[in-house]
Image (cartoon, rainbow, N blue to C red):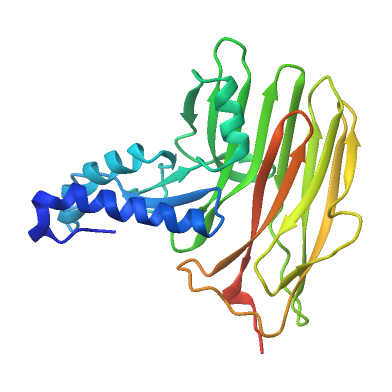
Length: 272
């Protein structure tokens, strides 16, 4: 979003209205995590004078509305773009910050090794207790939709790591799979409940993996393979990255609810 230069004096007020209405639209659409890409000020970026002029204004406004930096280093080849995430509707973020209000946010500043691949890390740490909440984000603007692919948390004797694998290639029948993993790193059992969220027109295998209550003992891991099917007349959403998300919604008793997502690249899918 940009404001025409001839409205420079009103740019900040117009920007607030644009951001506020966008957030309202996201909330009405039941989004609990949303993101935006924004420009980084760069003296070397001579082609984008408007970007340099309005970059600080937009970043200040986004921060006012709860957006925090998630992907900065090497987000694009020229390192001009950054990605900001807003987690204000996410129950796990709100629950953690409610009991750890002085937690400090740190970001990886670049991709780090994660589960055999690469991801960006956002992590809130309580320096008094060493409790933490961390999100692992994958994606590149206009190529692969930025999404949270993993989450880790420690609160007292409860600690876990949950992540989701990329979807497999979709076959001729519009079918594919992905895997979810949950590891108990804590001292107490984890009682969990799983559901899977997908856009209308994509069905998730309704076997024991979904809507199932299970218990994971300390030091143990559970992995599930989940199947999905794209209906023949599924309507591709009009998004720049051409990616459709399937989200694993994980509820952990005595903690909170967590969402991690995998993506289906729709440019590789042939539908009738």
